[in-house]
Length: 522
Image 1 (cartoon, rainbow, N blue to C red):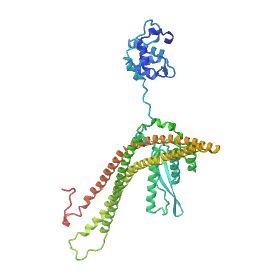
Image 2 (cartoon, rainbow, N blue to C red):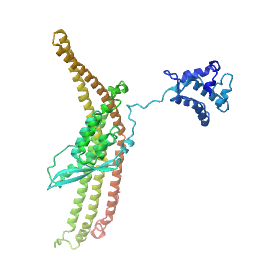
Image 3 (tube, helix red, strand yellow):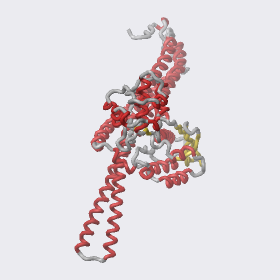
């Protein structure tokens, strides 16, 4: 092989040494295989030839020695001369090795730059990926005991795990509590409020409450299941898949085995190294922007709810309008003698009675429109608002929790130091001094841990802020759903109105002396 027959250093062109110095590592003076491959790519040699050269060059654990690089440079030069890059040609070479055409060696220094490694602080996700992680449906299954409603059970179905489990609100409550403990530095959405049900199942207010809570639980579990740092966690998997009799005990056992994220995350003690220098300024500006977005989306949701309610009210009005027409048309009271013999009320009455069917259909279409606006528009707005509220809650936890505890620990440490200085001035028992010293050491360790947790909290907060912005394109989904619901609703209503118009001909015929109204305004 060439390594055994390399001539003395005098036979190696100075260009070889310059290339080596340009692309070798500073620490171990070796050349990475990836760097040599980039060097080959610059030669514009056919890919088959490049592969042959790479096969002839020895490497050890992904690195080339100086002599291996020289061999590779010589083979490149031979190939550029149109020769077969064979080590046998080098064995017969008694003169200086040929010089490859690679340009200025200084221009090769960029080859040894490592590709930018993925920044652990960056959340590399898209809204499509997040929404595609899982879709979880929740259906209410009321459970009756006697005449009064005692519990509501939910059927929770995960598309990802392809399984259905049954959960009660208390199961969600325990799961939520443990998620907050495990992921205290991340956005854990809030649960809907718990309320004791006083009425019976047929009570309209109770049914509305149950449905509202079901929707809110569905939003909660979908946000959790799609969160990039929750999706593969054992707590979530247990909640969505465990079919045993006591899921709450299983959840608590799972948490005890893991602990909180600070303990299990390998980057928790290194978080400070990845934070940008202006992290506080970035946090402040992002928080204000998200606060403004939150306010605007709340107003959008309120308007959307009003429109959905208006559609349902319109449905009620149309239905009542039709019923009144039906009542008018079914009035069988005979016409009084004073009525003109030319009166057409008898025939008009029959026609009016028939119109109630169309108004019933219009009421049904309006009610469908209201439901579409609720399901497709209001729910999407509520989903994003739940996420924004969880971000607001997270910011408050960071400020009132980690930062506040850190400040209290520092104050306690300061008091201990003053006590220690006082003990040094005034003679005290040796045991008391040693105890104080031990407490000071423990407090120093506690402060160090709190500082690490503070940086990790900022690290997570920075990632959660990115997650909010990743969710922002959901605005286009919401607007698309809003426009589509309006187009569909107006088209369906228009078709019924158009079908109704010809039936008015008998009301505006020549016999009653009235003219039929035009189909469209002049």
